[in-house]
Length: 105
Image (cartoon, rainbow, N blue to C red; front, side, top):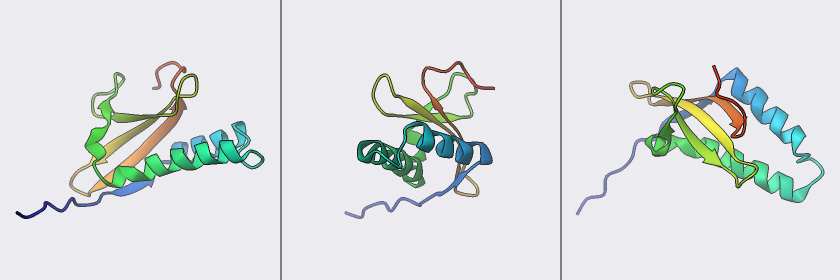
């Protein structure tokens, strides 16, 4: 029996997603709190895990072409919103936002 080798996608962060990560890092005080830093590192880990199985995220209500993964526990759930470029084998993370916020545009 042969095992199917999954082809890795390249994960890229849009400028907005980079700014989101920076903002979250400072909001949770990850520099001064070991538990906040662990939480933040977990967020980054799930973002970059999109290189494998990017289809695991649900489609967003705002735009069915986009997908999302959820990270964290209530009340600190964040939405990782991304697109998949199949031809280029690229996942582009567009936005990382708190789940309680209104829909994005």
